[in-house]
Length: 114
Length: 114
Picture (cartoon, each protein chain N blue to C red):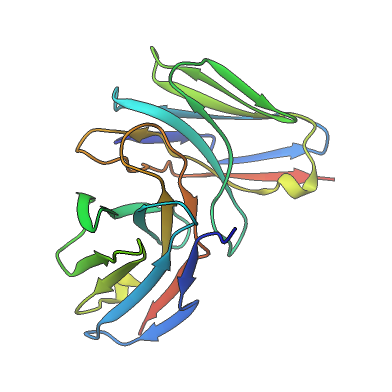
């Protein structure tokens, strides 16, 4: 039973560039959430996708966008990268929106913006 | 969810002692209360969770207690071991806004000394 996977593991970009991060949820899960974790801080919620739609969004600018595919995998896109976007980007998968269901995290993508 | 505070921010104990970390939250709609353990450079891993219809849950050396009236829940680790050293995050989840995002606390760095 595959867990949550993310790619790439590490990424280095320069200011102003665009980046796409990818996530495959745990088998049987249909909901993907994305979090940003800056060094020394807790993860911050970016947004959540269910049934290929963004269902909830945290306090992040429109430069952050996403997509969910019919197979439940998801992408996180960040445009016009800033130095402050350097962080560990985590995705978490779960089953359904309602109810109290557990979220399982992937290993993350470490993004460095120079 | 929403405003989430953890105390203490750092905790140092001797091997074999107990450790307690407290999490307070402001969103009364929160209905799911997990604790995650994150080792350096790794993903957050769920160690225990509790739902709003129970007050306490135990899993071997780890327990979580919930006080919904006072809006706080606590992580208890007994007979601590060096491998318990990590950062611990509470992440209460509310259903406000149509989704089920986790709102992470600021984290507690636990160090278990020999």
